[in-house]
Length: 240
Image (cartoon, rainbow, N blue to C red; front, side, top):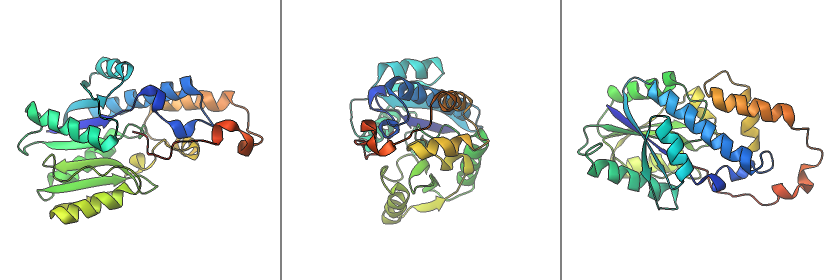
C-alpha cells in the first residue's frame, strides 16, 4: 500500500503570490478548500492506504482530521525539512519503514488532481523498478507529486526547478527515475494566472472550483495592476 504525505504551510503564510487577487481570508479559504479536495481525491485512489498531513497550523490540522487524514504537527519552517521530518516520523511509527510501502508526496496546491491520475502514477510504480521514483511535473518545471519506492529512495528537493533537481538526485543515488505527465497534476495554484488556467479545466477540485468561480464573479477587472501596492511585494518561494 501507499502512504500519501501532504505538506501545508501556516494559513497566514500560504498562497502569498496570490496576494494581488485574493485577500488574506480568501487565500486561507482557498488553502483549506484545496486540502479538502486533495484528501478526497487521494481517499478515492485505489492503492492509497493512508493519508497524512504535515503542518504547523492548528486550523489546518483540525480540517485535515475532519476530512479523515492523519496529522503530523511540525516545527520545521522549510518545505523539504518538513517532508523529511514527516517521512522519518512515519517510518519510526512503522508506517513507511523498511521499504515495503511506497511514499507519495503531493503538494497541497494541486487541487484539480483526480483519483484516476493518482492511480496512473501508482500503477506505473507497481510495474517499475525498485528502488525507483515516479514524478508528476507541474507545468512550470516543479514537482506536483513524487512517488518513492521505497520511501526515502532519494532526498526531497522541492522548490524552483524541482523536477530537474529530483532527476539529478535520483541519478546521483543510482535510483531509477520516471517522469509522467498527468493533466490534472500539471496545474498548481501558485500564481495569479494559474487561477484562470484551473477554471478552464474540467478536472477535479469541486470545492476549489466553487470558491474561485465565486471570486471571479465578484471581482471587478483590475485597471492598473502595476500600481496596486499588493503586487509590489510577493514571496518568491514555492508555496507548500
